[in-house]
Length: 289
Image (cartoon, rainbow, N blue to C red; front, side):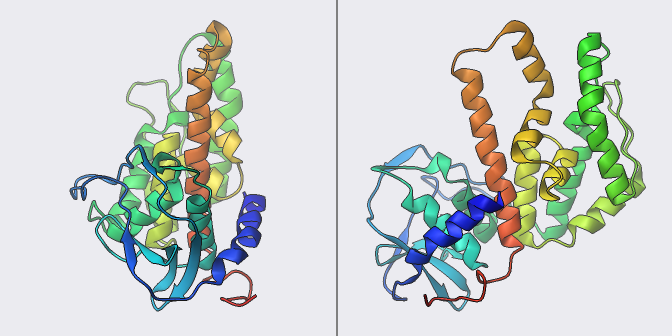
């Protein structure tokens, strides 16, 4: 993850030498402004309409420029991010698009738009509780009773992650074969709520995004804490599916596509969390070489 970040940082330096000001361009990740009841879902594709991508530092943070026009959110707010590192990563997303802009590949941009516009109108406490609620249906807490080979696979692969989380946060999680799942103690939820409260609103958007991809709060904690890699977290979240693939075979292209997409979304979410927790600028440089 951090090697990718450093490449973004170094490659992004050429994006920093653009003059501030200029007109703005609205590039919504949807044909209409979304209702408050749902988050943004990016459209399919659009012909690329710009040549150069750059970033500038404004009063509210770092802005993205497409040619000489400033990027805006779907709700027409100025697209401004809190850290230079995140701005470079988003600018790299836009700069890497070819003749066609594939919005569905631009997960960092989508997460920024969600953070800026907050289409679901949730506050920090609501974001935290939505993430913690996933413990009630956490993927790695639900176990099968048969076949025995899958029972042992879940025990060998999932139990160490649960034990790590219990030791790391001083909590109890457990697992269950019941359709109702394990009974999560109230103390466990309180501890995790307190832990997540240390993150800012932007980082919490990223955490919830990762949780929804992995269907697991425990795996998300392991990933954000750098206890797991993206590949490990994704594989653990798909353990039963991968078991079935090994047993019955792979559907050509379909399973591989799903796996790569899940890795991409999970990696973007984890990177977003870390970049939103970084200091405002990369190293000690601002806009000068």
